Image (cartoon, rainbow, N blue to C red):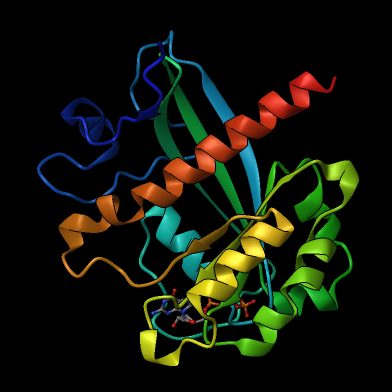
Amino acid sequence: MGSDGPVWESKTYQKKLLIPGTNKRKFFGVLEKPNLPPSVPNVTYKIFLCGKTASGKTWTMNCLSGQEVPSQHVETIGVQCSHVFWPMKIGSRLILFRLELWDAGEASTRQYSHILPACREGVDAVLVCCSASDREGWLDMPRAVAEATQPADRAAVAVILTRWDQFSKREVTEAEVEAFEKSRGVPVVRLGGTASDPAQEMPHIAPTLNFLCRRLWQRDQELLSIK
Ligand SMILES: Nc1nc2c(ncn2[C@@H]2O[C@H](COP(=O)(O)OP(=O)(O)OP(=O)(O)O)[C@@H](O)[C@H]2O)c(=O)[nH]1
Ligand SMILES: [Mg+2]
């Protein structure tokens, strides 16, 4: 029996991911990575965040990579990339996931035709962002999901519903989200809010990182089985 699942709760891995003596995430440069035994395989995935302007793409990217989230909307110019390392056990095997996040500002994407092809090239997952306070955006989600992916990409797809924390401004109900997931077969990640205690930043976002890594791994298995 394999012991599939997250490992970040273990002190051993927290030491690798957090700045010593703090609960802040360590940042790794382009040539750096967490200090795990060489026998642990590293897998890199490219993830593209798309969606309308102010849908929360930059917010999501910063949240996933442990950076400060923007408190107000500042349009992203061009493309920004961040990466995050996340160890997970798949079966009984420890794997170090390196998620490369690509966030393109909506206005730049419209203005410059080379941006979208660059973001889509070799993509492993597409995260379609939508604000839970944007009813119109939500109703347009089936089209947005279809447009975000191309069959040839074979990318994993998920919707990120941001501002789920702003309960009073929600324009999407839980029942609608569940119905969408069922009818479209596309998972919806409800995201929003930051941990009230900065020490809880990692526990707050860990379920989303676990979900993404599992989903990417599952997609690899699906691709292998149809080859
Ligand atoms: N509280 C909360 N605020 C959010 C959330 N997502 C987005 N916001 C707010 O919405 C603003 C706009 O989100 P951005 O992430 O900057 O939007 P974007 O999709 O990157 O927009 P462009 O760069 O113009 O394409 C953020 O600065 C936050 O103030 C969320 O999940 N919770
Ligand atoms: Mg942005």
